[in-house]
Amino acid sequence: MPQGESAKRERWRPPRGRHRLPPEVIARSQRERLLEAAARVVAEKGYGPTTVADLTREAGISRTTFYAMYEDKEACFLAAYDTIADALVRRVSAAYEEEGDWPRRARAGLAALLDALAEEPGLARLALVDVAAAGPAAQRRYRAALQRLMPLFDEGRDFAPGGRNLPANTSRMAIGAVAGLISDELAEGRAEQLPDLLSDLLFATLVPYIGPAAAAREVGGRGQ
Amino acid sequence: MPTRPSNGNPSPAPPGDLEAVIEQERLPAGREDLPEPLIAHSQRERILNSMAASCAKKGYGATTIADVCEPAGVSRATFYELFKDKEDCFHAAMELALAEAMGRIVAVYSPDKPWATMVRDAAATFLDLLATRPGFARMALVEAPSSGERAFELYASGKRVLQSLLERGRDDPVEEQAIPSTAGRAALSAAESLIVGQILAGNTARLPELLPDIVYIAMVPYLGQEEALRQSRQAERAIVAADD
Image (cartoon, rainbow over all chains, first blue to last red; front, side, top):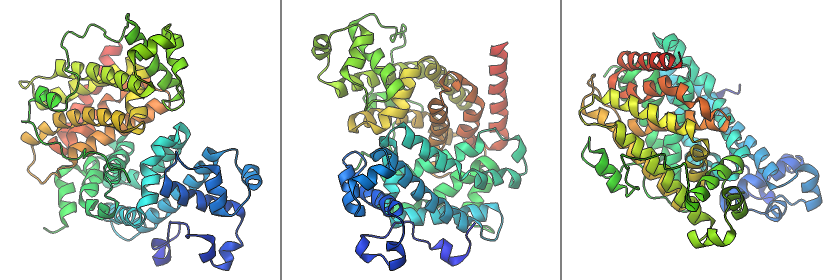
């Protein structure tokens, strides 16, 4: 798992047009270029209106090359989606590895998530909102990405005194609460204000594990 | 970027007055005498049923007018007498689904009941409804949120009603602490995410088994862990007893 400043600050957006790419990036495979182009185009245009021609033009590859790699727009989008989700999960995990007890690390992970999403409103919307409109396969990818955060939430069980007695789906539901609150903001066009949501998200994350009184204390800062 | 009407803070109806909230959301009024309205005899209801079935099978986007007409045994001409287009039909099917859901919830709702009992009964009746109407369940919770503004708005109004019901818990919290204003919406999203996961996994018939989990997540911000766990175990025992 990547750690340290470089991983925390890792850009999760693919670089803008090819012309700005450094040489080592140009040398990367056409596949990587295509996936980056797909994320960019879909974030800007939305999934529905995006065509294969948009993707090949943006990536600077031929239709033949495209169809040699992916069956259709959906297959390409799904692969691009996985790349975005990977970068997001890596960034959250890197922040979460910080020193401290579970509530402190949960706060760091959530803050990193909100900062990453606020930096790139188009990609954020793509990752959490528009994905629902891209069909059942995309929805399953979205849910699979959320489940990758499960170990981070499950540590709440070990931290909480009565963690073993909590309902079986506690972590799944806590993730759903966080994703739901974020999606609501994104759907209303408030990506840039997402970092303001940190206290509410932290409360929603902690409350099933440690209860409302302790969660409110953590949100308010300890020792208060 | 299109923005959606705010679903964050519905202008508050008096707490406890669920019917006023439903009225305010302009939902089809919950009738107390809903006589299995989805077991359709009229052409219109047959069409709405097959719209829901097709949404469950292949999604709203891929559904064609033929998919809707053939199982319902009606002609395209009849379809277009009753509905303007596919979206109009989808909207009517959503209204029907919401009418039934709201009817069921109003039936278990009473301001005289303790909040915890009411939330548990509402959650139980909602899960049972979804389990017995898998097509409508998938349409309302998986398809509607991503199938255009009109459908989204209906879905969002239903959610706001549930949110109002849940937030009555703020009236009498057992523990004194600062609960964020988003706590009810967070709990609802948590429950929804769990339910949608089961629907997508093809486990719609087993949704009622989620009651103990959902009771816990709905109650814990307001009642604290101990009481929420007690309520959750009680819900679990009720399910086990019902299975025997």
